[in-house]
Image (cartoon, rainbow, N blue to C red; front, side):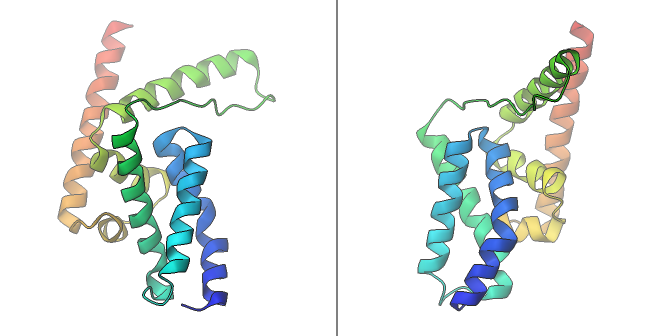
Length: 162
């Protein structure tokens, strides 16, 4: 990978990589730090990484960095994602829904959480997720199925409480 290809990779993938990290961590500073570190690693390894494989390489490095950070820090800080344009009532409902989803995601094992975020938030297909996380396509499907079932069960239990 040369300098031009590296710059293209930064432009094309930095936003999606940041979104993935932010959704996983719920902390803007940590997400930004991980993205910066991952692109620094890409620069250091630019001669070893083909441009065509830069995207899965970046997401794999980010995923590993996320797991390492989670292991280091036992608590995750939640960040509000609402704009000032929303009404206070819709903000309250959106906050409650967001909080429920975040809590459901937080209970998932790291691999299941990554699979859900990569599939449902980022829109990757099973093969791409497998490349990023080092899993086979059937493993990705199983992890996604199990994660969604856990989330459904938690949401079902929640409706019984309400």
